[in-house]
Length: 368
Image 1: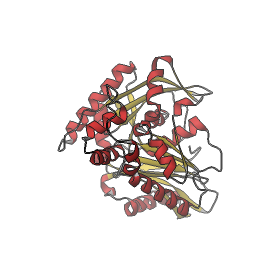
Image 2: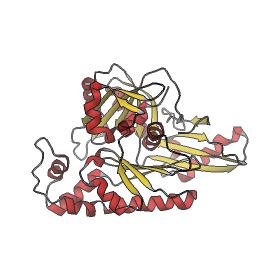
Image 3: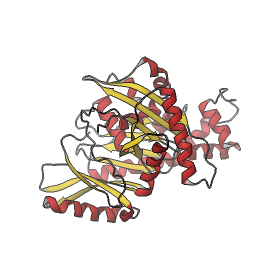
Image 4: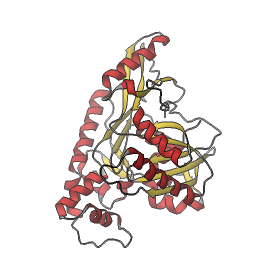
């Protein structure tokens, strides 16, 4: 996404740092893109050729339901079981993973300072992080990347995440006997994946909406080449609960109807008409974020939103977004493009779950 940029990072709390290398190198070490969500684990392994990426392994496994009050340790164990299931089903022998983070314990913010000596940039970034991050920076990891803009300013992006969140992701992967070699941000992974698979034209403002179970990631990149990432705390699980209330049904029953379940669902629940109402808050949050971005960045308006994530596969969901958002919403499967092709052994999972694997694919595109 961002080519030939300079960057420095500093771990404030002593935990493993978030990755700052957003551009695509030609690293020789094979890694797994490991998207550890709240409801499922998604895994992708890629190989790069001159013309495209080739999917050499892929997997998706549900995480066992976590009763309220479960400790972080129990959550990590359940996530590790799902990771192991992905490893077994895919047959991969790779044991190095790149994980992603998102949610209220993560912040991605742009910065712009007057010209500063190189030695003073890090201090300025850390001061900025302490002012804009909604959590204690002293107990977090902060990375930043300077992006030249041709002006007499120091501009770029800072990324921060709590050490507690980073440790949870790292521990889950290590419990599955994987080495966590890099920690990335889900929104940045989406933008990297889009840049590689779609090759967007200059001058276009691109928005990607990844709707998961607990969080929705909205990632935007415009003319200034500076990423904008916001994680919205309204996603698939909230929509399911709203539909359950509207139909006087259990969330489990609604999920079965939406996904088909093992026996295809009964079709008795009225979900189609009520889906729009259940999505109203998400539509409002996305619309407000798009307006904020356009006003702050003075960028061209977003005219198309590429929708992905596990909930994007729900029948009628993308159509609801398309009818209610100002920009056109389309389902995005990065593996449908010629620049990202699947080997025959994992083609079935890519065809069935492609849009849900977008973050994992972006993570797998990182070089170490």
